[in-house]
Image (cartoon, rainbow, N blue to C red; front, side, top):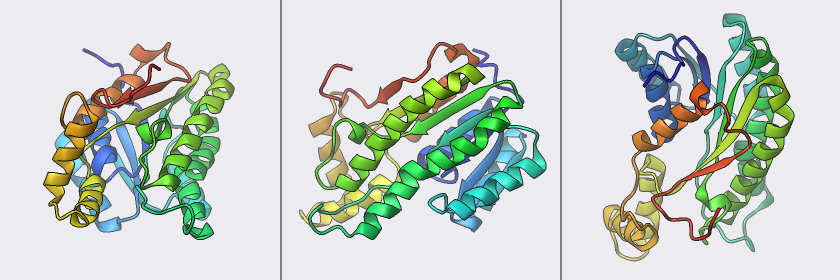
Length: 264
């Protein structure tokens, strides 16, 4: 299937690992040029070099922490200096948390708010004029099933991902007159390095290995009985970026192996 993306330009945050890396590779396979942002400069450079070599697309690496407004300004300036517009923005950067509301300090709440919500606000605000230069575009916000169905050990993550979903819906209504489609993806159990780190920490408390903890979690929560791979999820992102999804506007899509326990 031709998804009609060859020659487009995508800006992806958190693009050097996990879901962001899988989406980057999936888009590159379709001929999409990339601007990848991540904090780990060396890993980012290697990833960009590997993608460029494997798929033959242009890949720009920008080391940045999108929880910081100055870093976002730097990203936008570098993109403007190299390109006349952007076709796709994927707000993907994020990470899990672990705390109790009663003792989580303001600083932790603020960090996750800046990382999950304000990064998407700031980047979207800056990128929309660049998309207008191209006659339209696509913004995808990677939230989480936890925006709807929270996990008890990470209330800050749950709250900020829910806010991201609402922001996405509001932005969709504002942006569609400019031919810019905004949607949200709410993944379920996707086997990323972040999940493995979480499983190690939580499993240790119960005397379980990370793999044992993950296997139990998947069987307990998902009818499909397993974690999804970042590559499985990436296929869905590619479709939503494509003109083939032209009537998909302001929606939230669950890719969760059947985990969600309500009708959406």
